[in-house]
Image (cartoon, rainbow, N blue to C red):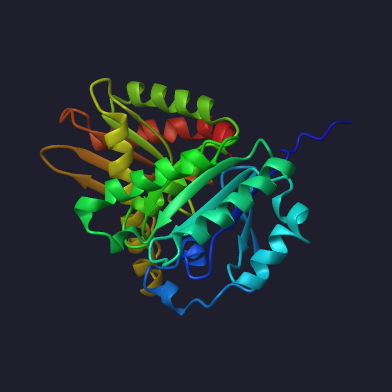
Length: 308
């Protein structure tokens, strides 16, 4: 007899980079509800720190946070290379913008890709140009682009996604949202059904968030809205909601939902499935909040089958 229980999907993510690059800080901020200030008390990672995070439904992220001290890096690239780089779904390489030796960073990156090509040639690669807040705002785009050009020349087999990131703003959420977007098995189906819900609910914008991390899973907009701008905007909401939720916990209060209504729009952030929250915005003043809430409730059972 075949079991009707869902099959858990485990995907291995390796986070690599030199010591002090900020690897553990970003992981703790995204997956452990640390604030940016909290990360200051984190020490250096000893060897490899393993954690498994249930992300959406049956998707489990098996995260390998690799310490960046020289003695560990040498071990990763030699004795432990098959263990580290075998069966990798995603390699996230963190470049430290405060480094004084960029050539050494590139050499380590090259070693990572060489091992990845041997043991996980179908893996996806993402490069985070981290601590971008240290760069003047008008120079950040050019800084990331210079890394993007240099990395494209060094990545024959792989086509890395390159992001400028900081623990102090939404750039980290933007990068990680786009990384996990590629890992959710039935994302195209979820996105299509979210688009249908957006139309049926007469919503202007609908965003699906993962419940624990509040990373953006996907979004849908009215026909005349720019989806890229919506994504950018609501990745900022990720940071705001997580900060607010931490404040609630500090004050021994439970974060449940948010409703905002004014002359321009009505906004709802509601628990949706067991692994998601949903954000819905309507601008038609004739749509009563109770109707939008009823639409969310009606769609919940349908999305449970997709997202959980």
